[in-house]
Length: 286
Ligand code: SF4
Image 1 (cartoon, rainbow, N blue to C red):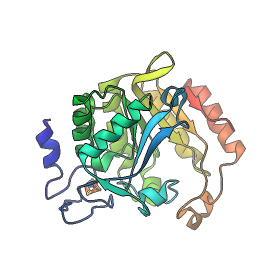
Image 2 (spheres, helix red, strand yellow):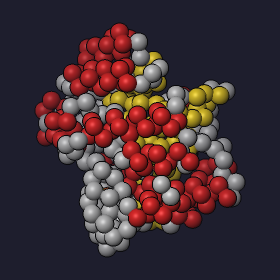
Image 3 (cartoon, helix red, strand yellow):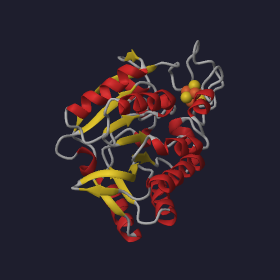
Image 4 (cartoon, rainbow, N blue to C red):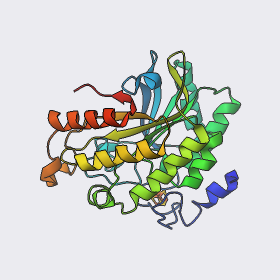
């Protein structure tokens, strides 16, 4: 797919992501809550990612405003859902941010929630590379991406930090407003694996490959087990980042079963299940 084609997916009828809004983002905002200009909430060195991503000097993280999902428990909801503070910038300014973070010794550029701006981000990566940008690019995504976009990204992205949130589409619809999450996300993750392979680490820092992230949601342990089953059956030697930092935020209080933190026994059950499946990776401490 040539660069022109990815731009055509936006054009006057946006089909950039699986939402397929078919809206003219030059004059309207799609379900991602953004139009056709880059909007960032913040950028900085970030030290809270997985060890080979943050390293000693930090991950050069850029938080994009908006999101193509609508998770009721989103922990970034002021940025992703409410867009309470953001700045509109062009592709050249984003390229300058990449270069600034590289100059600050970031191990990588970490694009948080990039899917709805991916066509513009690729332009920025190209601009930055022509000015000496050479650190790995991490695509930090919900995985609700079109597989053909992931194929296209093989020349732009080195590392995927890819969520697999749900194996149950009733849940993805209930909590995120998406009825085909599992099919789409798993196809995209398989494409990530195919194009970038296993996680490659040099001198304790990730250089390429795939980390699959899963946030364990309270009282949905069956979903987490199905997610882990899929990973164990479909990805050879996966690197999984299991996250237990769930706390109720945004609209989660409207759902009693997720209106509190994860309890230890549920987390421990998932850890035991992960162990039983022989899955390796990064598991947060209780
Ligand atoms: S990128 Fe935004 S406007 Fe385009 S299809 Fe996805 S949600 Fe809709």
